[in-house]
Amino acid sequence: IESLFGNIKNKANSVFKVKREDIAEKLAITWTILWNIYMILICVFLFILSVLIFRRSF
Image (cartoon, rainbow, N blue to C red; front, top):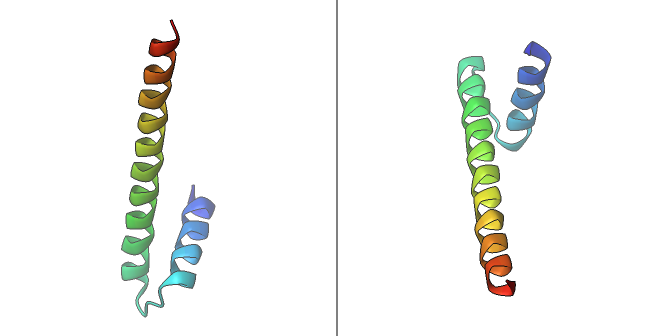
């Protein structure tokens, strides 16, 4: 878990330069939450699209 958090924090730091570690930690958590929301929205969109497509074909 710590290595995963460290990797996320390093990726967030490479995008945005921050000076304090606590800000970098909050930024990494924020990016992780936003990424998960993005993935959930894509899955919901694809599910709705597939339901609409297969409902019309039957």
